[in-house]
Length: 169
Image 1 (cartoon, rainbow, N blue to C red):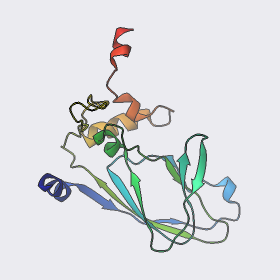
Image 2: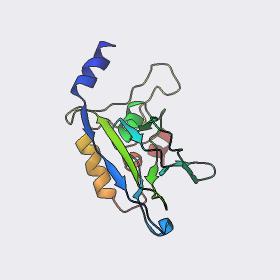
Image 3: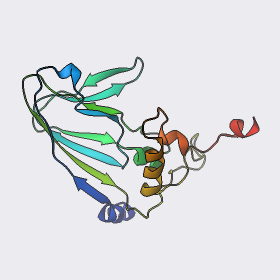
Image 4: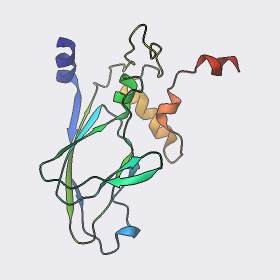
């Protein structure tokens, strides 16, 4: 537990305020394009006006998060996905604008120190005993994301460790 507290003390954090003005034709405007966050977690305090949407799989569809006053939303990021060896998935999300009301959200981003290698945690003897992802620093991961910007290729797929079956073919 001590290592966890020490890690939190050295983590990188950043806070932002996002304002999404009301729009008479919200179907023609993108508030914030679909993406995953790169760090460990994003904590979002949002206004009562709904606008955050999460991608739900099977079938793929966007689900609007209710605008609950005082609610704190926790979004898992890509590097926590790597740290947990894919057990906890990063969340694909976007923001949409509202027809009648302005919307404000306040995200707080938490990630590892820039020089820390994020290595998948694996337990010996468990079915997930092999690392699925390569160890990577945040700047290394962001370089992969930047290189793939505008493509439909996931940066997570680029740091996956090749499976034995893949190596044989």
